[in-house]
Length: 117
View 1 (cartoon, helix red, strand yellow):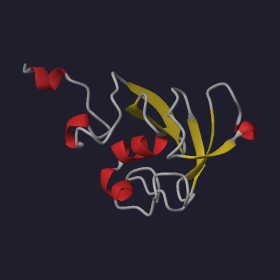
View 2 (view 1 turned 180 degrees about the vertical axis):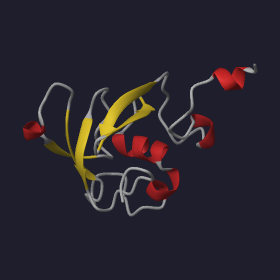
View 3 (view 1 turned 90 degrees about the vertical axis):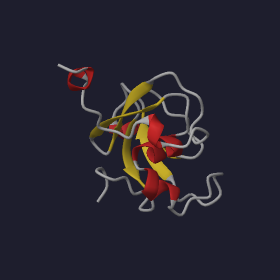
């Protein structure tokens, strides 16, 4: 049996599919929840970059300023252990991803393949 058949199936884009300078350096993927779906994203990165990791084309060509001025990347989130009633608004281009983060709502401008409609 080859090593490839022993590997777990990847459910997200692997880092080799992205340009080397797109993400901040990271050592591992961490788990977050986006609209009820568990996904793995690179640690030590802004949430919008993590969305780009998950859905390269829709985020790369989306209508985002990447510096917090347009608010098109607004999300509502809470961290692990907090309930939905504790959701905070934030801009995905400004928030660093946190393991266990739960994204409960997003701007209509954020389109993620396999997650949003």
